[in-house]
Image (cartoon, rainbow over all chains, first blue to last red; front, side, top):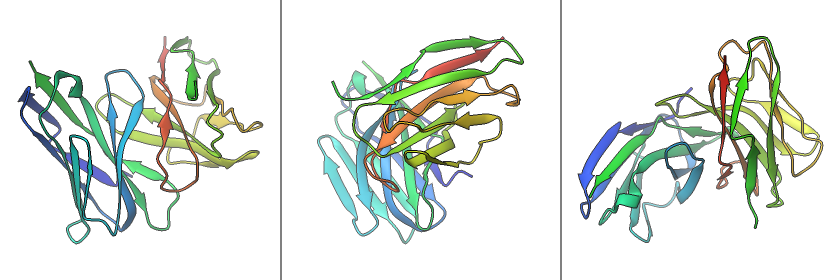
Length: 111
Length: 113
């Protein structure tokens, strides 16, 4: 079953703009991770935020987590063409071994 | 270079054939995973292994089999029992088990002719 769901499904922005995508999940988690996938490639880990954290930064990435709303957001600031990819959230559910991935948000950055 | 490799990159199979996808890692990770990705969808877990000689079924194990005889290797066999095997297959590994950052291979695209 799919624990996380990203919104929107697709996003098109101009280079230099910010991109925001959201992830909602259903059950309590230990942590939430964001991954990037370029077309036809494997996933690359971007950032991990634990359930007791509210915000985390890594370079141009900012992730927030609201456990009361069971949601997370990923903000990419000053986007570049190289940011064109699909972005997935993955949740580590309490009492379950697996990471559960959402269907992803496809981001296109136009030059 | 440390990393995780998958081979082949593209694989074509006739209906009724078994095929084996290779996954090797030199990261000294204990845990390894196999996922299936269909167009426009997220990843679904097929099998995972936390330690050598042990593995567990994921959400969609039917029609697949694995082995974990060595820490570095976690091959996946797609059997003829898998009704719709055409998909993109991703292997991953992590240093620890649950909740750890996962490192992914480049994937194998399997097409059934």
